[in-house]
Length: 345
Image (cartoon, rainbow, N blue to C red; front, top):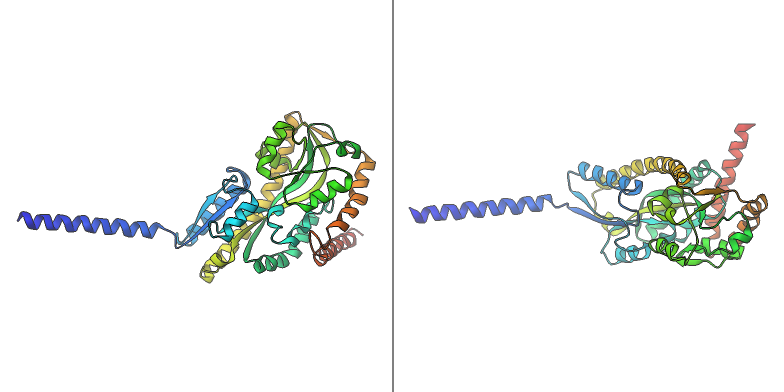
């Protein structure tokens, strides 16, 4: 009798172990995406991404899962891309600067002083998106969505309202960004290249005294704590890309792939609205923290928007991006202005 009881107990314990193992395997996603981003945890960018992943996980019944590495814990854009290449990551939220080293034409929207409104941005971006998607595909990536940082402003420890004052600055340029470097060098500034995670420390130590960011971005990254002035003219439009490794993404069944694309489009379209609202609110926060908006002199504004912009573009075409993408971009922008003019007449 005791022997029979021991056998029954052993069988029961074995059954429990089998059930627990089955449950453990059942809880594991069939398709796991390890994704990293420089965006800090708690920012509107990471909140959007977590909302997106939650929807995808729920609609797939847990078959699709995500492991998220936010706040630059996987390194800068270059490090993230290297880890994608070797399979340590399956995707990432990249800045335009970082991912454009792989897809150069993607940086065309970042030409300084090209856009004056978000309406212009939205029209041109919509027209270029199919081409961007194709170029990412050629590089083994799926461009699920474009993200936005917004219009970027010059932020500094000393007032900059003239070209002479800009030339005297110790200005940062994003590491690997030929566009910012070309403009600054054309103006007569020797830029100091740094990765985004190194900017705050460099402001603290005095290695740089001038940087460039959106209103909201400067708060999220805490750069605003080390600057006193913002030159009140948009320097450039900044954006990014949410991409996944094509090899990993292609393993998804078609209905899951389509569902993920739709979810990404919906969440990141909402992100545009949230980002622009956050930038408006952040501007007031900066003013409340005794940061002054400085108007550039009319001569400086005209020089930057016309002469220096044109000289910079000449350096960039067929180097930083292709002539064809530049011509297509300007065509869409010109068409928008023509349509707007026709409506207003």
